[in-house]
Amino acid sequence: MPQVILPKTLAGKPVGPVGYGMMLLTLLGGIPYEECVKPMKAALENGANLWNAGTFYGPPDANSLQLLSYYFERYPEDADKVVLSIKGAYDASKNVPATRPEQIRASVDECLAILGGRKSIDIFEAARTDPNVPVESNVNTFLELIKEGKIGSYGLSEVNAQTIRRAHAVSPPAAVEVEFSMFSRDALEKGGVYDTCAELGIPIIGYSPLDRGWLTGQLKTLDDIKEGDFRKFYPRFQPGNFEQNVKLAEFVEQIAKKKGCTSAQVAIAWVQQQGVIAIPGSSKVSRVVENTTPVKLTEAETAELQQAIDKVKISGHRYPEPFHAYLNQ
Image (cartoon, rainbow, N blue to C red):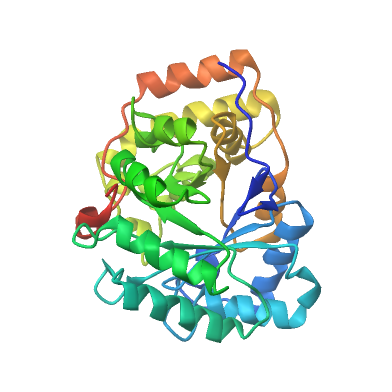
């Protein structure tokens, strides 16, 4: 395949080849902040300085923002090293976007109040796009916030090619964030998100590069997903779908074993090979080190992976039905 170059800067700041997704640290609670800071510190020390946070990764009083405030209070010297991307303007209680101008402003102001001046917002994204609120309105609100010094730049999340073009016509986004992995390749459809971003020169950030654990090599049977695990509600992990999808995970694991690395490292290398910045998340230092350890795929390995991707049809939607209305908008 042709040589693809990973973005080296976002929002005018240098970023490493892998980022760090913070969702797992706070979404379900239960992890003390003093433990959360360990993988965060490990991410930064291993070059993953693009941190992806969310106002809805946990309850209003204990989400990414409170954790970030805690971290930068203890490590103020790291504030300028981290490129912070925050997804907000989203009503988690109803699972709907909140992207009217006053709602975007309220979300940004709340983030800044919680951060308390300890860290600036380098990129702010509306987590989802409301089809009833023109994206042009969103971008104009973001431009006002940039002019006021409240955010450094804006990004787009879960959008389609048409929305990207409309937003770009007002002002180019710093990045477009999409779900991207060997399991989730919708962005690669001809004329879609990937082609559009390549044409317009917009970096792509790929969330869930390990597809919620599928590409870690740890899932073999349905029994590996314990009761209470949120994945129990996701279509790809349902009986029937699971048995089909595990086939691709097994192919990836075989290649990783031959290469002498892990399935996760192969999966992240594949995402990087497309020129997309992967933002895997983990609450364990060992996993952060694993995910940030670089692996290069050979042409033969790439071809073998492509054969597996072509052979195994992924079964089941990437999200449960209640979330579908605001995906790829």
